[in-house]
Amino acid sequence: MAEQQVESEQPAEKKNVLSKVLGPIHIWALGVGIVLVGEFMGWNFTIAKGGTLGAILACWIIGILFISLIMINTEIGSVIPEAGGQYAMAKYMMGPLAAFNVGLMLIFEYVMLAAADVLVVGTIVTAISPEAQPLPFILLSLLVLALLNYRGVLASLTMNFIITSIAFTTITLLLIGGLTHGLNTLVLNLNSLSNGLPFGLIGIVAAMQFGIWFYLGVEGTTLAAEETRSVHRALPVGAIVGLISLLVGATMTWFIGSALVPPDQLGASEHPLFDAALASGHAFLVVALMIGTVLACLASANGCINDSSRALFSMSRDTLMPDFFSAIHPKYKTPYRAILFLVPIAAVFGLTGLLDQVITFSIFSAVMVYILTSIIMMKFRRMYPMGSIQRGYTAPFHPMPAIVLLLLSAMTFFGLFLGYWINMAAALVFYLIASIWFVKFQYKKVDTKKLMSVGAKCWPRPEGY
Image 1 (tube, rainbow, N blue to C red):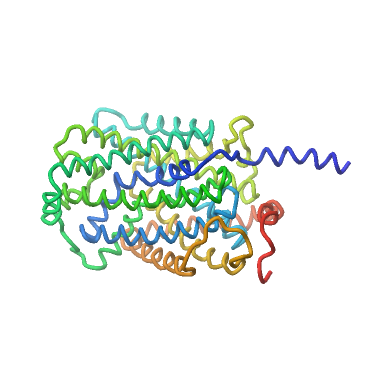
Image 2 (cartoon, helix red, strand yellow):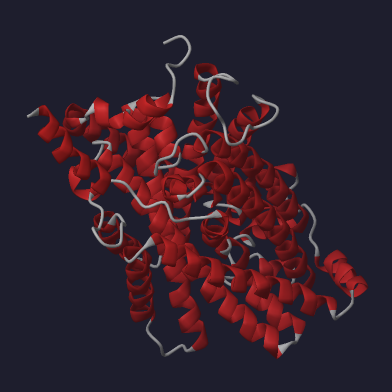
């Protein structure tokens, strides 16, 4: 009888596991694809907050934040072979309530970012043809991306690799096109158009709120750990090469945008690189940047649907959310219910038209995750010191990356507070209410055995426990 029960349970467990089909290029496509839209728009609001010089300083400071974050994520993520990313880290290091909040923050970081992406697609359509209605294009974009994610992660992220590569190429083309004016001319333009630090050092801090737009979402690479063929190799390679790509792209974007467009216009533009293409005087670049902007938005929204659905799926499989969302499609091996549930939510927020509000909620949720990640890293190294478990990557100079991540995240929070303190208060209230719901209604349904199953199988008993 016992043998029959084991046999009957075995297929059920296998049905609830995602397929391992991804390699390093897919991890790169997931990380860079989500973020690249921030180099086509959004980053330029750093000019309005901190001036031209403040913008590039904020870009590089936030770059240090994300270098620290990627080092931490890659070390811990390479030893947790399951979907969920920072959520999975939190459940092993901090317990169910913290894991619930981290998972919910990840869901809303990516859902709101997807909403912002399709909202921008709608505004681009309106800019091309003022008579056109953006609503059909917003809905069509989400439906196509939902179908792509529904039918399989390999096809979805392969498509992301293609369209992200094309979008990144258009930025490079803009740089090359700008250089046809001559490097000396561009440097002189940058000198004459620059407004330096109009608000002093506080402007740099204020600019960090939008400087994060250069990199926001790249940490989502760890959410694909369960679907990666060789997590010890693919995750570090894809994440680190992706971050290097973004650092280079961010610097190119700032340089060419600031050298071709006056700061007042650049700081208020909804599509700064398109404006830079217009200023270059090359018709080909204007068309290329329009295509690149749309592709970057679609790649970002596609990656966001992937990451948010994996976070919801993982929470549901671990019993922190209703079991309904843990279903995997029998043919495509995707968390199809999680995908179909979250896409309409992204559509609703996208249709509000409140781009800055949507982006702010996404940034707030992300920075909260970064702060908790620094704490998770401290606990991880205490519980599993070097030599106790096999690591695919080891973050150097510990605990400096965790400390730097915590300090720079706090500075970013302060910059966010300067412009959007009401939004921050509303977001805190939302997560507080969600936590109360979890404690009162869902916590009693949590199955600790399921929650800790992978860690119990793969890891030794932590030191001091």
